[in-house]
Length: 299
Image (cartoon, rainbow, N blue to C red; front, side, top):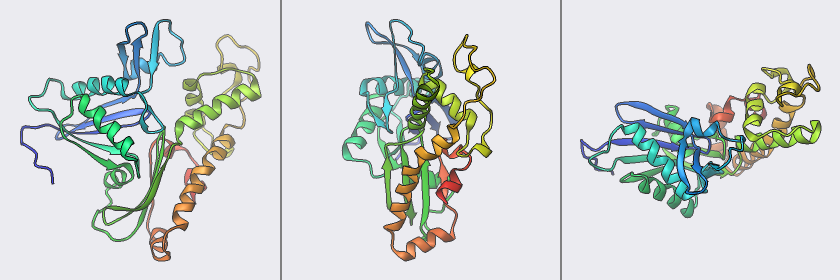
């Protein structure tokens, strides 16, 4: 059990592949920024963080390197992650703390020891004191208000940008689960390749993400804002009025392996636990959870 000093600050940090959230106890959510940092190439000096750095993605600014320190839900560039997290922690606290703050963070469900150490060491190098890591599926169930003392099994699905966490929760523990290195970033890449292959138009991943958000659905009947080919390139008058077709179907097809993994985990459960899951609501969270039609695909 943690023994926290009354004057020691406590932070909750969700270091996501796409977005970093930091909450401070008694103050709420104070940081919600893209997990992106930009460096001056020659000296690798940080010049932009978060939203400002994300605006430089796909723009090919000379002498500037734009880095996303996490890939697939885990730390891929340790030094960049430390620099970015230090900036965000200082932004959340607003001053240099007398004591290093205690941090609670989320880790991939069934994370390896290497993945766990990388995240914890990055946070400590960024200024954290004691770091407590919690599996994301369990953290999601707590955030959804699920009582931790209930014995009934419940399915939790956290679909983020870099990973998809699947967990079966019972009595505050993970009875079964896994983390797939698949998420919204993979949908963006699939869209980028699809547009290149079918329409011979080159777009970056940032533009592909815009298309994903505008479509926002896994079936053509649920698609939100329509994207026209003339919108994909500045100064491109070709195909004006012609709609970009097939995006919803592409995303549905891309998400089928994740749905199959959920089915595999459920099939591995004892019949009693599976019956309990079908009797209660499942929890769906993460950025991709906003895609219309996802619940129907999982059902």
